[in-house]
Length: 271
Image (cartoon, rainbow, N blue to C red):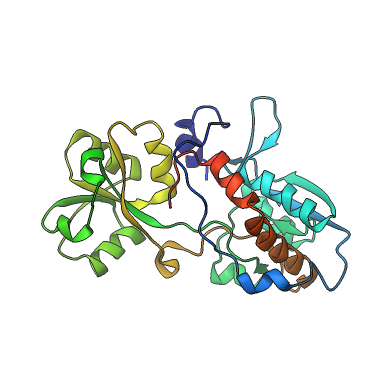
């Protein structure tokens, strides 16, 4: 998780004018828009998070807890019109704190693993994580992945993105690298023809390398390979809180708040 500190370092100041991003796709269930905020009243939502996961949840130079998830938690509480607290925990203790009912919801990127599914319920996805190609800027216009047949594409060794290329685009010559940064740097140097991997991580690198490279083609959404994306975890059976959060997420997408937060925190959009 601390590796995200290296990714975020490329962004510089965390309030950057969102000149290159675009609105979020619709992840939430649109049928939820007609639901009431909660059948059972929710007097407050106690959010748990961590403080070392930029740009989602981290401490700014003044020690204040900030980030996309922090802003989202506050907007959820405002939408449901309930009191809101946000408390930071070390990553290795956060899930246990939620299990021990020291909070009502964990907004920190907790994976929807089979083990976690036995303990927690999850909100709808509020930020999906697509895979995308990155090419040099002059190759991005009119990009078609089929045109990469026989060309070298960097991809992180052993990753779900490598499995995607092997399954769906087997004619591409895969060049396995040890990290996303290594692959993107190989693209910048001209050692490979393209890179494929986690679009969100690539967006951080592109923020400093837009003169060189850019996203090419479409975003690939494959939850069974790339994960379900970002959701909010709650103790299993805490349906009133889950219901209220899901209702708020739909409302925040409808009124443009989710797009606003995304554009603020991700100046190079990854969709």
